Length: 357
Image (cartoon, rainbow, N blue to C red; front, side, top):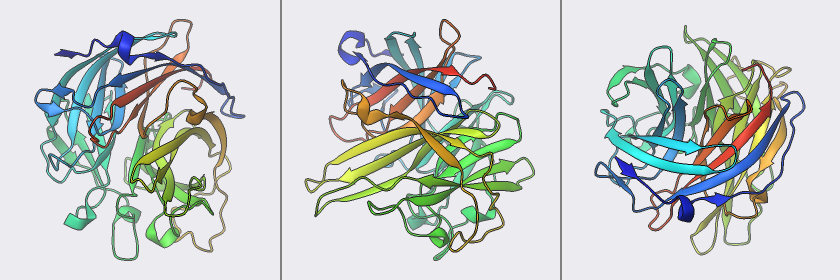
């Protein structure tokens, strides 16, 4: 067991705004942040590359997954105990690290605890250069693969159809009504149009995969990429989703800017997506020229508004334990891309409102 023990040095109080999203009806309030240094080791593995996290309310344990491929092709699982309240972070204790026993479970991007079956669900983008497409796995808490879950046809990659390399499955969440599992793409399918630029946003597909592998799909509109200078580039996409209600999802949108110095900066916003009036487009092979109603969205929080911290590459989002007073907690974690000297950030929020969950 490794105790980070950096509460005074690693934690930093946050002061920021609050926003209310119309039909979603919630308020989010920043609480605190915490940094885990880049050199941290857990059971012989470097900690970092965190692309997903989830909280198991039964064991009160956190599960995190790394998408790093610099050392090992397969995903790595970390467990942690995280103590915080409505005012501050108390401690972060990294407990264990394990490799997922499948070399094709590469570029893992999201993780969810299946409380009913007492197992984990992992999903990732794969590695199209190695002819490994997007994937969904059931694994036990030790990282042993239990089942390779088939994905709907639109996730099958080809030269002209399907997901883009490094732009496919990024988010996953259980539907609150028990109908199935939501999967979100980071960028449009190849046949749906080009990726986002600073001139235009894009439409991406959110898929509800039912137990019988049938699907419902809706279109979510992603913001344009961040403005950049000549000689630089930027992109924009969805990095994680989280179920809020029967027709509402929390959506983490991220725009990355690659500067002329080869450094990156990230600009992340939290939205609420309302699917009430969106069209089911599962039958559309391509969105190009199609007639459909998109999900509507409202801004909940702009992470650039935090005055005391520069927010890095947020990729992970999870509900946490209930806070005193009945508020829910919401936790985010960054992917440091295993950059030397770059810490992993945890950012904590309290959430008020919306009683449907």
